[in-house]
Length: 318
Image (cartoon, rainbow, N blue to C red; front, side, top):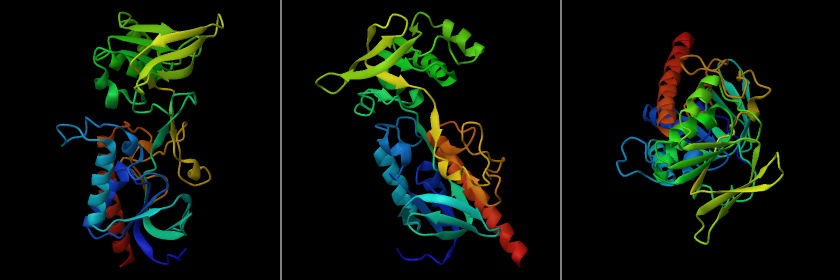
């Protein structure tokens, strides 16, 4: 491991659409930019089967191809993408010290774009059939199920919102709620009741297994009625799971970066965190819309804010 003694203009944590978009902007303006990614270049976008709602691709594009295009564009301008995990950010004032599994680095500014991951049920078939019948984003994948049957899992705000959204496409939706009541707001519950012709609610119902046929396409969901203890089966063409998001901010738990009640990063209107010179963009930011297009937009905005911050630092030093 070679020691990195250089003070970089900006280090970005994560290499999803937000960070890659930001890097395109910073490197085009000759800012020395390093990205650290512990997993897959492109983040959740890279493992999304098909993206139909990203501007500029009239026929859609696979998540993997979109991620590759963003990576190549960023690297064309000089972005240094490194495989490694940032474990700690220490504020040194004019510089930020980052501990990583690829060696320690220093930067004048930092962009946190580590994204969020969908909470999983952890049941058989969930991982095996991801993007082949198992989904976590109705806006991304709902249109593939026009006039099809669906199962939606969850009882919170996001589950009800997404189930209502899916009525635009699906012919029938079975909403499986583990508890005996919704955790969603009264407003959403009233709105849900208006869609009783398409949405059948099953309270006290666990989701135990997702089953597919010989063609590896989902055919049904098996659950348990907690009242009777009996197994229940729901025929379906797809399963949408909305039980929450898990932001990738564990490495910030002991830092001065302020998080909201679910662990997402709080920012000001300029996307700056509670540490001067440290910014956040994309799905890890509190208030994010969890869309690839908006993550890219936030990345571009963060890059412009970082440039402005660095210019102000230079003026103060001169």
